[in-house]
Amino acid sequence: MSTPEGLPAESLRASDADRHAAAETLRDAAGDGRLDLAELDERLDLVYAARTRAELTPLVADLVPAAPAVSSTEPLVLETRSGTVKRTGRWVAPGRIMARSTSGTVKLDFTEAARPAGDVTVEAETKSGAIVLIVPRGWQVRIESAATHSGSVANKAIDPPQPGAPTLYVHGAVRSGTVKVRYPYRSRKR
Picture 1 (cartoon, rainbow, N blue to C red):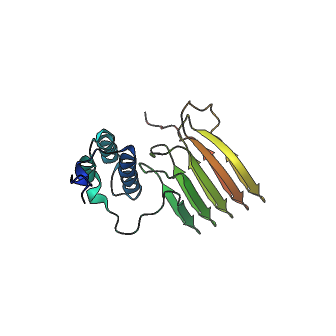
Picture 2: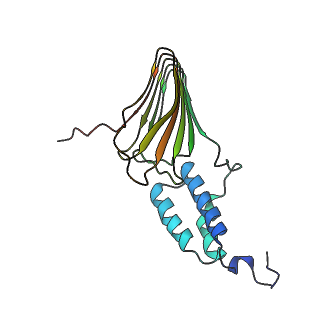
Picture 3: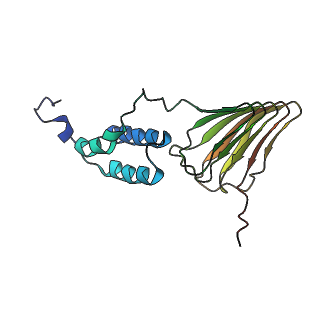
């Protein structure tokens, strides 16, 4: 592809929109597990330092999705009937998560999760199971809505939030189970 002036499009200066699109491709790849967080950070630094489109191309060339890309507005959906579903360790947390449990457990640990674009909303629904949300100290937690029959929706993460830290918004619907937000347990190593 060439520009009207006959210059290859790749030789043109990269715009903020070009850099943003490349960064989104990298974040999506990290969310899919195609990049680890260290490589994501390294490539993002190069994306934001890129001056031309030619510098952006090799940073995303190996990340063309095999299937159509999922919109960033699509929620992460985690469901279990009687087992356990976990997201722990290093992972990329999307802006919206739907956690559903019949009688099992869904555990989301945000302590090592990357959150590239701000706050997180979790829609937690359980019948007789448990949904456990673990946040790092400093995050703000807001229970936006809660409906229970004989269960509970509890926020144990009540320290004052740190400025600029993400906010976790929780919408809980519980029949006889629990939705709990807490901090990580302290290590008992000696």
